[in-house]
Image 1 (spheres, rainbow, N blue to C red):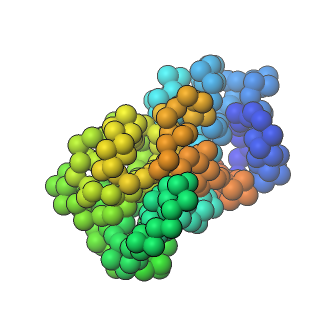
Image 2: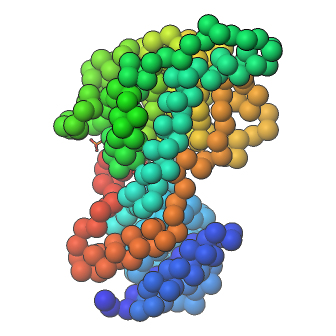
Length: 313
Ligand code: NAP
């Protein structure tokens, strides 16, 4: 592979570890850690997670931007991202299995009626009437059937939950009820007891979990959101929780992260707050995938995870 100059956006201890792993994996390339780079016009590739506003300044020969994350919403919104560069995201890279666990945990929590049991415990009430719902008739619906949605759907189905998925394009997924398009979403929502969001954040999916969508779910449905905070209208979700239309929510992502101390989610009895850890990036998997993507890109190929900038994912 041709020698390439690469700029890495690095902050914090974990990112130093990633930088070190990248330098070990790609000894043929020169990798600078931003802001230390003495020849920015020579940089051809950038490896980043949430780079600062001035990151792309003077990178006049930049060809490839590789995100150390599955979502690229923050990069597509970056005012400095040049129009003509390839943008590549991580696909799975060790995230799919922990993400599937997170979703399975949420489904178990809802199906075993843990929100109600916790409240009963708070009041020292022996609620023998709170019989769990039966797993094989507790349908879980997923918004998004990509790398992570598909892995979560399989994990749920392996645990006897009936599963439905909704995505942009039609799919044939063995054992899973599939829906597409606006009409498909309306058809799916009333049939699911728990709804999971594993969509990318795009113009079309921003605020998708709003009052209208929540009203189409059956009473007592449970929300699991490990997608992005901006998928959810947080005010509408709180109203649906407070009116007992929605029984509870397991949330990993928020409009503002870290979640501000004054946010009502922290103290809501039926909300579980998780600090954006549903599908953590595995450094070794991420570095392997970035190395493979760079090799494909430098041969003018199209790596897995090449983002369609029109669609926004
Ligand atoms: P992906 O492989 O790109 O899958 C995205 C899925 O969403 C696809 O099935 C796609 O449909 C569907 N979709 C996109 N736009 C849609 C629309 N307008 N209407 C209906 N369906 C639509 O993405 P992924 O790797 O599974 O990741 C999903 C998201 O998870 C990421 O973008 C990120 O926001 C989030 N994430 C969170 C964490 C965490 O720790 N909390 C970690 C990793 C990722 P098609 O199949 O038809 O294209």
